[in-house]
Length: 122
Length: 107
Image (cartoon, rainbow over all chains, first blue to last red; front, side, top):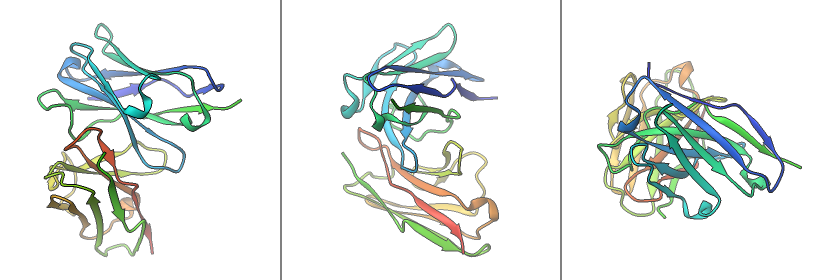
């Protein structure tokens, strides 16, 4: 079945970097854009950015520009989200979610990963 | 950036009753509006897209309406499994943005 499986929880110190993976299965990897969305504890959802698994092009939320990098490995149908210079405000659950490439990339997310908790603490 | 405002923040409803959730956009998003349901410890689940189209497998008691800046999610007869937080999301403009959520709790 279609699923997105993310890597496990991470605990990082302020200033460090974290890299979260999202492995897709059950569909053609390059036929869907992948977005990343995060959710701080008890808070709402925040869009972080998008990657096109086909060519690797990306677009990021302005507030994260310079700190976030999204990449993909088509051989393993996996996308990665790396966030650097971590601060306490980055403590959140990070989700990957897909959108079909027949759209512009701006669309509803039909399948989500299970989420990865990233805790930033000294 | 388009700001999405949901109301109320919390809605207390008895099982079997109707629930009506609102979402307002700071500028027109046409019909490019989705609704998600999120239960504790789970990822959001897509309920509605295109403002009114139910996603695959979503029961008919969930319905969406509206266009432009005003949208509504209606749950016609609340079941026990419907108590959760609901988010709206606009995908008409970048960056994609979400409302702050409405929690539907048992009255």
